[in-house]
Image 1 (cartoon, rainbow, N blue to C red):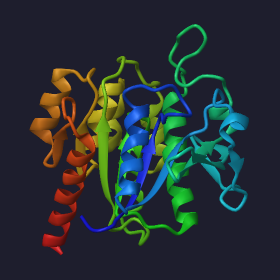
Image 2 (image 1 turned 180 degrees about the vertical axis):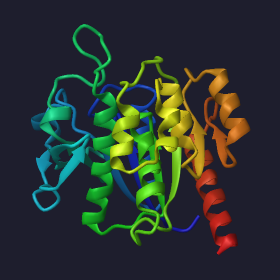
Image 3 (image 1 turned 120 degrees about the vertical axis):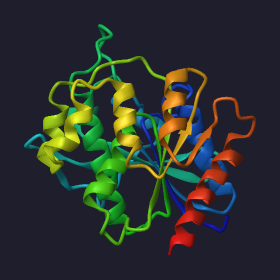
Length: 273
């Protein structure tokens, strides 16, 4: 595959968060692609438990200053950046006091799923889109890791399909196993507020994480089954409902396999042109 511009968007990335089945590939995949000669940009949320001094995060003033409205609430977007040690690449952080200042990722101290996790996901994905537009950097491939990043293909397909910055971008979603937490009852309303038709928000009513994955993957060009905790039911759903997919759950060289998926999607696009 010739050199491409690849945007990686993940809910968790090592070393900024502990190593796990999402954070590890979310670092290794862009690192390998960067080393292979591709142009890479990486985004994640700036959770409050990330030590900014230790990881040397600093605000990018020229990219900050946008306000994003989520459920009729004006929220300022702050962009920070840090260099990944020994990886020769940077990570951009989406920050906002209301959604990400708290010293936790998805759960309270009492291990309750944050009631506004769906709003946080919407703000994160819309923040990535606005920042990429400000960067003036048009990605060929956008690879999203985890349910929180899975709203990005939805927003791109519905609201930015005719934007020259994203018109030719192809999206890939890595789906991981997760505890079946429920989104808030307000999720369909938040999506309607942003412009989705009522019928389009139906799959998000009373949705848990699996339903969010399934609702969002229909807006993707490819899906990668990832991690050892993925349920067989999700594998069966993807195999039956997604055209371009790959099973990485037992892959010995996942980075090579994902590159094949990228090429498959791009080749199809070129053949249709």
